[in-house]
Length: 279
Image (cartoon, rainbow, N blue to C red; front, side):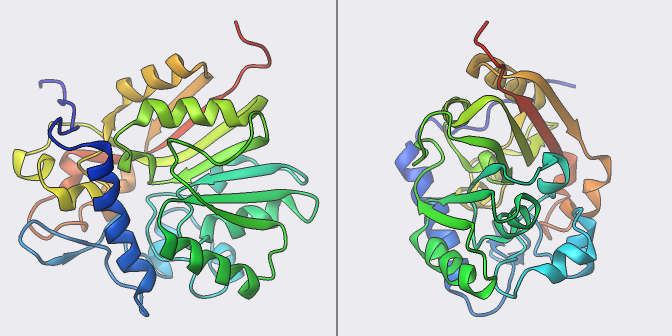
């Protein structure tokens, strides 16, 4: 089988891709009811990174306690895993969530780090930030804050956070190497990265790879495991581990009514650590 080809569309600028994603997630943030966040190329509603509720959230790796612990309105069903489950958070740690959406993973992380810890969510969609800030009060989460910004240009100081998490968002970036470089900058020495995301396992059909909707659908922007490993290594990370989740086909296969996307992408956990000193 041939290696999957890069999915970046050279005719589409970074600003173009950001605008595609921002518009779609602004629409999600302003909807009153949970709904699927993507449309297939033919216009039918489909699930984007799983429109999960209840049992479906458990399928992604969340416990019933996780689901019940966060007030309604924060879990928009936009993930492909549970980064908190691999982050191994400790009380007092500072956590940064890349592409925090309405704040679900931030509020779960806040429970783990406690009042002495801090959680910062970064999202480039103003409507999402507004919704997340409203959810701070609903969840009585005084140790959580949300900042408007792009994950390629994180609005945090150098070496200021212990752990970086993200849930099915880095695939949306047209500049993933820069995202990992920024994550490295923001982490303290010995800080760690714990990400759930999709990775590419086979070449995408042209109709998917070139479709703007498939970018916001967490599909067309996926990279191969080898490519992500190289980007993390180039950024300076060590102890890199990327583990595809074989059972993710159970929900990825439902993302599009027209084709089985699990033939091309799989959910994976991505872990890495910033060394104590530069080699």
